[in-house]
Length: 409
Image 1 (cartoon, rainbow, N blue to C red):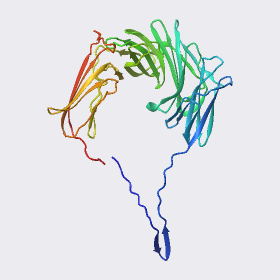
Image 2 (tube, rainbow, N blue to C red; image 1 turned 90 degrees about the vertical axis):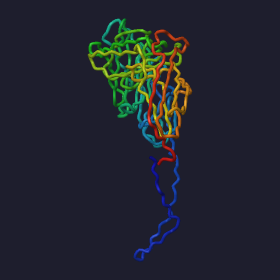
Image 3 (tube, rainbow, N blue to C red; image 1 turned 120 degrees about the vertical axis):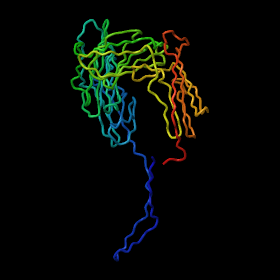
Image 4 (spheres, rainbow, N blue to C red; image 1 turned 180 degrees about the horizontal axis):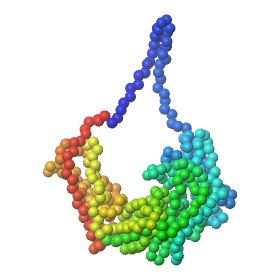
């Protein structure tokens, strides 16, 4: 609903005789709206040795608006901002330090991200015969589901991750790493809310971690698995070494919230054409099962949507893993038909992840409508593997709809 306001402009001088006293009211004038002034924020960086290095920083307001996604300067309105970066150290060419600073901008401002005095992250896993994988350090801004990664970096083993401790109510720092064993994976992570930790120690022991039995089946996933991406506490990511399908292994994880995202593509490093995503809260010493690629894929919980005089529907989740929370499948096409009684109102052919991927039609008449969506799936390479059990999904809805016409308030 749109509201309206009335502005009364008095265009003449009014003389009011009140007990012999004359009061004058000057004409009201409209005030021009001027854009907020912008101030230049420049950033420089110093590595752990005290050497000046080229800045490649990120800037975001404490209210969650991004202004700089890698660079040395940006113009911002007056306000409070967080500046962060992974400060590279030329001396060894492989390590970085996570540094952040919070600044109040009221005019031209310069920020120096100084990595001197940084602390090395201490990590370990209580298991033998393992090889450490990549390590990531990320700083995120916001809280809860509104938390967004501001800056971060990846260090390949056996590199060392460094952080420069600082305090901030709006920042969370997350560290992740993993080790690979003969039949198990060990994922160690930690989240520090309130800035960057002064004591970054992250040790794991399989006996006190969550044991997750991961089963990757290939019945519905005709496309090769390209990457398994893990995110701890909603901040940062770690990409695990690709695991061929089918596969089953035990994944020991630090207790807490984990998001797991599986990406599939036709060619190595190609465009992702199928995605499976799940998340869970894991408790210490408990066992869990994560099943990806169930034997039969079925429609997700997507329904037609109405807005004033428009009926819309996206068939993108007609092929969905029944135990997976989110994801998409680009390996299909659909035909969506909208009818009223025996009259075809609209019929659209859609391609998943293509230019035309959503049905949308404005209707003018009140009545009972029927929408049918028939989707067919194939392997992007053209072949239809025998193991691809769900090749077609059909859905139908019948509903009464009264379009909103005219100009609603």
